[in-house]
Length: 254
Image 1 (cartoon, rainbow, N blue to C red):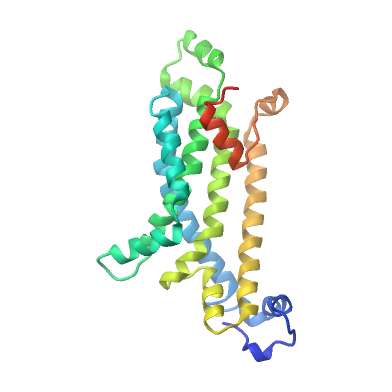
Image 2: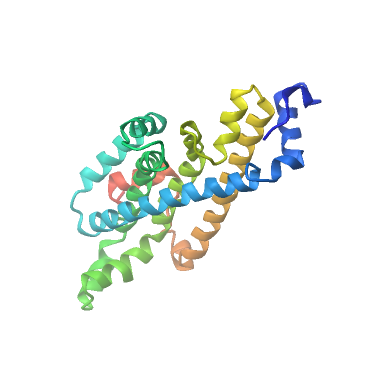
């Protein structure tokens, strides 16, 4: 759904993008912005659920036991380097059935797993050994130590990894439009096909705005979920992807 290029009164793409966003027709129907946002969030949610189911248990195990640390860091680095669009296209070509959602989902899972895995491992392993030893000396089981001590203390870094993964997925899930699926990427693909740059820019603005809103909500969640005592004690590290990666590499130790 778009205006013909000749229907724009603006002569530059930015003005055309603003006009496209202001056109009420683009906010209605099965191909309107609200419907595309819902599809975009649906794809993102599915990818993140699968990624969490894979990455969190592995991260908890490695962070708690210390086993496989080198493998986790190395694997995360390798997965980060994979080109999502190329992997998605490869999976789609390998699929035995007609084009479906799953090739794109698995390609995006490869994108989302590294920050979640790294953040979970880093958060658990960064907990002070003295705190863990004290919990064990009180007779707590390993499960109690993990979920009663390590997870609460490492929650800030764990949520930082999740936040990084969510932003990457929300920003990148637009590529599913390349294999004839929906979402906000449809505005970009369809606009490029007919040289409707107002639609292209409008779609890009909606994607960026959605990512900013979600990032703000996750930042608020991260602040609310973490104990105020950890903030006051200065035990909450920066939640940027770089800081998380550095924490994972060093095991949370200086």
